[in-house]
Length: 491
Image (cartoon, rainbow, N blue to C red; front, side, top):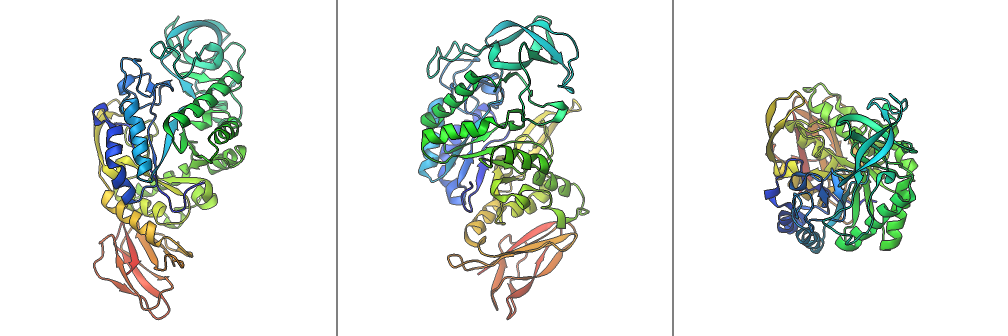
């Protein structure tokens, strides 16, 4: 489960460059991040991807190569070499920050050798009905890892370890999904396209005992090698849900401690997330994708979003102990595959909602903290230059408030179309109160109880200069500007 009042930071975005040397940067920033209030970092995939130094890490090639072997045209990865990665983790631990490794277990890409195999073609949009008869294809399904030469693991992948591919080298045909001979798509996966087990590359066959054991062996190895405290699991809606309780049990028994695990089940469907959490026995958290889509919609509604409903239909509201809340990530950022960026003006409101409430385990996005500038082609084929503004000043303010004030009874005032708020009354260890008020439309005000008679409150956002004083009953009229948030703390 989440650390009480803990905060994760996703310490990367999609368009970082190799010359940014991320592992060095995280080591240099570790103490400052700890002082700001980060308690855990989710680091990007640390192993060799098909694209070498250009690979963000999700085109997974060799999970045992952390930037140590000359493979895919490079020794180091996009983020640095093996020693820099280990040093970064050690430095974060010394600063009191946990580390979650990004695990891409769904697929492999960039195979070393072709193999002939019989396969049945399916269209991307229909994985239930074949679009033709079985045929012999040539697929890059042999992963021999010649640069590593068996160090750390002697296991080599062959076609029988996978259930499907999307490229036939014999006919140079891509886009069709080929279900390999004697295989079936994994069960307990998302039902989009009939069965969404297949995503990309060479899809691991989790029905195969050798595959199960190798994925468990790698998990044990990465824990021993790096000392990470848990995992972010990529693309879990494409992997048989029943496998992960087995995997987590094996790793926790091996490590003799609890591991934090959060999965990416990208679907704006609360029912699907409830189903998944039940299917894995509540053994992991998942990202609150519906909450992100609420933020996205609100930010694009020009003040016409019903803010009373901002938390409705979310895991944060219905299953907070399993919810990792977020505003943005590397997939939703502009020009990416799941592009649904929250507009910059709304991000302070969204971060207040995930950082200054007691539900969920919030995750801050690197691009929102540091800002980012990059360019890429959009879906329309045109090139765009993107600027993500930094919200670090306000996020740091919110983190300080979270550590000191987000305690005790929390009372909600979600009672107005534009203007909502809540208060935290404090507890014995943290006796001072907090009031948060925001509006996606005009300037707003709201009578709220903070339980502190005749007390002085100031707006730590510095949006409003004048203090507010409570009456003899511990109530006050708290205010915010239009399209803004104000965070009132007891002095």
